[in-house]
Image 1 (cartoon, one colour):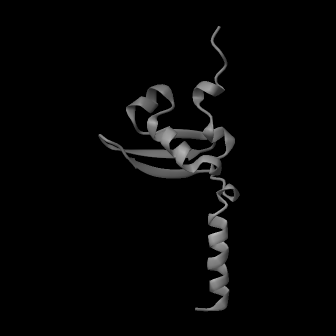
Image 2: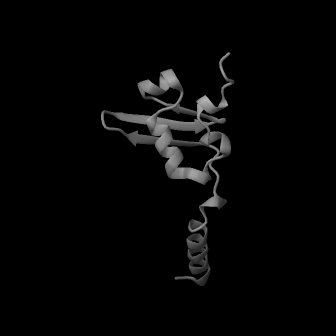
Image 3: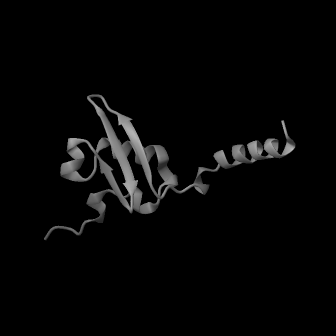
Length: 90
């Protein structure tokens, strides 16, 4: 193996140990749920999921799970729940 490639592999291992270096600005994933597969996306500061619950609440277990999995690799607004960003009811 070339020495330059070995250096890149070593650097990649260091990066992998520091997930805080990565911030997702958009992503698409398929979540294999208990009843069906659901397509999730994050783009332009907003989550979307094809599950029925998300269509009513703008949050769901699939989004919450990805927030936990990706943690600090998501921008702060991607970690906020829609309930946290809405003004309080009067």
